[in-house]
Amino acid sequence: MKTDVAEIQETLKDILKAHVPTLRIRKDKPSGLEMCGTKEAMQGKQKVDGFYFASVIPKAKDCRLYYFPIYTHKNEFSLSDDLQKALKGKSCFHIKKLSPEMEKEIEGMVSKGVELYDKDGLI
Image 1 (tube, rainbow, N blue to C red):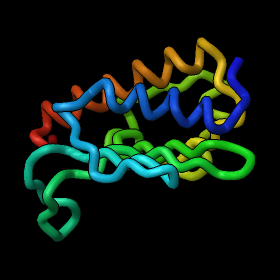
Image 2 (cartoon, rainbow, N blue to C red):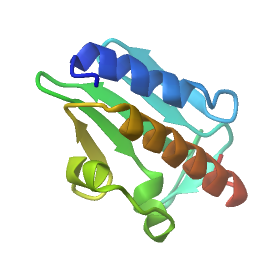
Image 3 (tube, helix red, strand yellow):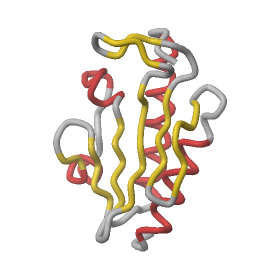
Image 4 (cartoon, rainbow, N blue to C red):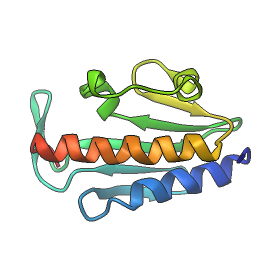
């Protein structure tokens, strides 16, 4: 079980970075990682250089995973109780403890999001 915020951050970043080059790194700094698609797409009413996918932001007591596919394709995801408890709002996970089971679930969730966005031509 990972409880160190820096260790959780690195694990989540590695999960997202495993999907490069399908996803592109828009920002990678100690303050956080932001991932997006690789082609122009409409996001709302504006054209963007890559459709937003996810971010990992470290905070003092937890690590935040902002995961947009769970917002745009809500009905495609079912979460375990542990991951559901970490979900605050519609697309932000506050992760204080990362168990091996939760890590595997996040890996699968991210892979599914990449598949859904790729199928919809967003990335």
